[in-house]
Amino acid sequence: MSVTGISETLQYLTFKLADEVFALDVSKVREILEITTITKVPQTPDFMRGVINLRGSVVPVIDMRLKFGMSATEQTVNTCIIVVEINMDGETTILGALADSVQEVVEMEPENIEPAPHIGTKLNTDFIKGMGKVEANFVMLLDIDKVFSTDELTDIVAA
Image (cartoon, rainbow, N blue to C red):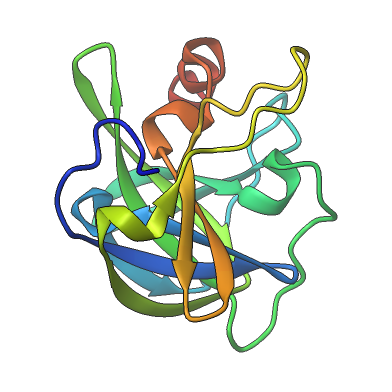
């Protein structure tokens, strides 16, 4: 059973948060940066680590581990910032997503993608496009446009 809306082979960038592997559609990824100085912005959500200067532009950086209810990302030699484009109300917003490490770009056939699990009514799993199979493991395919609510994105961009 494949996921509705995924009808062609797509490439995904896989990355790790703690021991879990996640993936983003490569068309949403602008670039991958080594960890750099992140300037903290007061009165922002905990998961917003701050902002970076990306060639003269201010880019908010989100700690994906905190966003998903994990412990904060510890900086290592593999820690990186995945710069992504998010579609918000028809406008493109650039965000940096802090990840423990980037793995690889994988191609996934639609038949190797299962629907996202539905876990009760209180947990929102809309941001999970599906569960991809890479070798013997599952990879959570994220819909980066749905990871953040409109209110959260508005707060982040306003900061």
